[in-house]
Length: 516
Image (cartoon, rainbow, N blue to C red; front, side, top):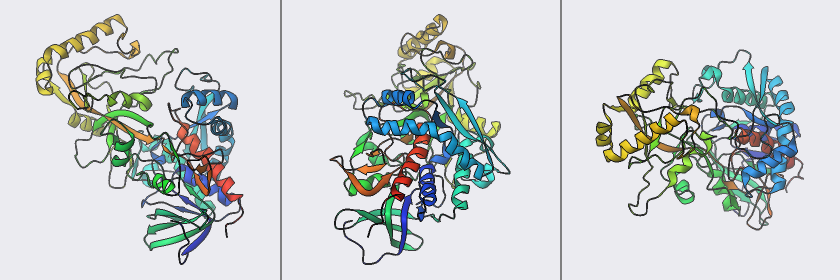
């Protein structure tokens, strides 16, 4: 809103909205610069979608080569100067990360890892990951029982990373207000952002921010209405977190923000939980990434194929970065039938493939959910999701498909397996398994959104920009809220954005003269 409230209920130098990785880093930097910072989080529990991540932050040894790669992945959708800041920041993360880890008695693990696509700069000796390896005396399941990552809690680096940030926030005595939702930004008569209205346990309050407001409250994975406006395919199910409903995007728009990358999301495919009240899609097994031209891993078998509801295969089920781009193939719309014939699709495989490995990988940050990661529990979940048919004829009947079409699809796939070449969609030969031995298993498969990239445009200082390319005074974005990736994603890149964007926003905001 424009115009000052009749009274301010509280005052801080910098107010940070959203307690995930980016919000934590922004608050830490504001505090270390000598400013008072307040962290607010609308949920009653911390971590956002960040805590569900794999916890592997993308780093680089060479900023110039990293920039070259980032520029190719963004395909002209993000300015060079913004990408250069991220590339340079990737080279600075290891030292910064290690300081945070030391303060929490944590050990750090690092390893080389190439980019996901065969662009210039993909080299394995340029890119890598850094993560939290161990924390003395820390039990992830006990500390954060509301979180399930795609790895069991004792192996979940994303949870350990949040613990390190949480400890650093506590060491600085930065106040955190949970169950406190940001509602509207407050501007003075000249349009300068000088605070925000929040709603929490104390009711509706107006909090003054003498230096800036930093929005680090994520994307819109859990907002079906926004998805229907920006994405063609529907429905798309969120994977992990119900709190990211586009609040920061709406608040930024309200004060004139321009938007970018709204179509682009980090998306894979998965299944519905058999419990109809379960609010998230369940990813199928996370397939290792591979770079075209370097070959896929020899030991990775993908026992299924995906077919549309007419019985035809239509995609490479094992793409170079399946967790990022495989949801895109679901977007085909048939104007004759007025349907999305690939939503849902069908996953099919045979008895030899059944039990190759656990199929399901539940992920969530939600106190209302629990999940036992024992092999028995994973198998029980899979058994509830999978259906089976004794013959291909029975499978065609139950799926409502023409048997001739389904048989042709399976025969063509088996011939491709024999030939060691998928001429239709280019799947890696080492991943291919024939479908021959009954019974045949099947499950409905849906597009899933892991996180979005769209949101307000920002400049090199993380300042949010209006539609005329001007910075909106004293308003910043960090993390997933308007990420830089506008075409293809770099694994671990969002976490790098949380760190680099968080520290850039926090430092720049802290250096401002106070508003009065």
